Length: 200
Image (cartoon, rainbow, N blue to C red):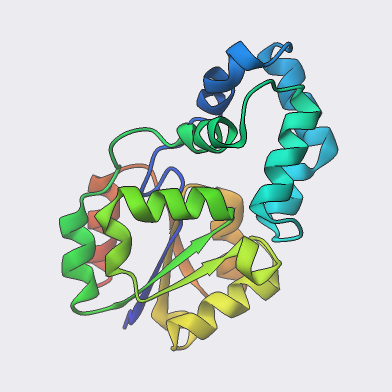
């Protein structure tokens, strides 16, 4: 019996397009997209931010330095959050219904700016009972430590959890720790999977 549902955020609840962040900064940046992307990845600033090793102020300062940005902090913060596309992939009503009978846990590799922007913009997140977020935990999917924390927040045995993520790598890792999962492709397939497991 499934007692807890573990949901990723990006490209499961909210569509994400990283290029949108650069586009929002392009008029303030001397680099083209590919070079800007390479500079950011080579620095590992985004990874360190996602692991909670640096705070939002430090990340914004690093982003300005790396990309030679000539805009203020507010513009950089706004652009960083612009990669979240308007609209959602799953309706709020689904989470409202699920929360009445199952424990809902957010499980995401994310950072403070993105998560706070998501929570402020979409009512979906109010239906979750707990959240395991990389920047708070100091670890990321697909590590065993991360999934152990997810099980702790689920408050039940691994086999009583069902995990939804758009990454097949992460779903495979969760299955190795005893957590059943689905690689998210559409609301229709998710509902079918939940029905098959007696959740809906």
